[in-house]
Length: 305
Image 1 (spheres, rainbow, N blue to C red):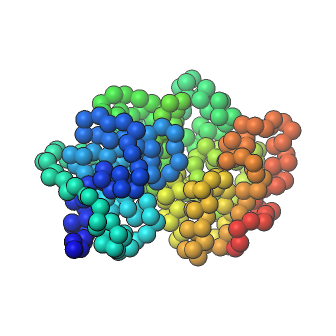
Image 2 (cartoon, helix red, strand yellow):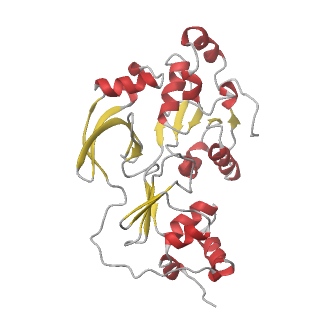
Image 3 (spheres, rainbow, N blue to C red):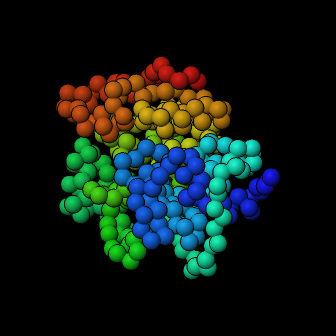
């Protein structure tokens, strides 16, 4: 019986592993297999596996790696636990070990930033308006970012993280540049609000009239929730405003398991997936004062502290 270790596990075919998990590609182009991401919910396949390199890349998150990196994410376990899974169960599967061909090193993330400037392009301003976001608020926290993918030039709204990478959004593109990380805004308040994405952050500011008595931790992906743990533990009060979906619930549970004391403050957008969806459905003139009165500083009921 084969016993897999880190080295031998990395040589197992990612394609075959996904197949054994019941995950089939949406399309295949040469050495690239495209899937709906097994790490999150999506409608358009943005998860690629390159069979030459036996490596995966999730373009929606800006993350990637080898089979072990994928396994620990899919099963929410440690490296040791994933190897145990392979050794106890998956060793009977018909894995096809890849004879990896030599290839030129390729960046994990094909997004290359070529320029950063003030946010002003009419197309990007129009995109913000379709999301119900006031451009005046967005221009304070976002930039207009020029970038290339496979040498082709594009531009998008850019929201910087603490490590110098950018979340990138426009009418057709949702992605990020490397390095992927969380964003911290503020630092002088006793309370912190945790949000999944920057569109929700901008939407919340708008609902609160541009004012806040809290700092903000924007995860930029629920997969990065653990990176916020040491920071959140330093706050006397933490308010979660994550999406009302499986990923948001899982992130809240992960923070709770890590010892973060928080209040679930997502009640005011009950019935909507996230704050931006709620914002888009409201008439700001009638609801904005009400939302300011119901800010997270008023502790709502939810997942326990």
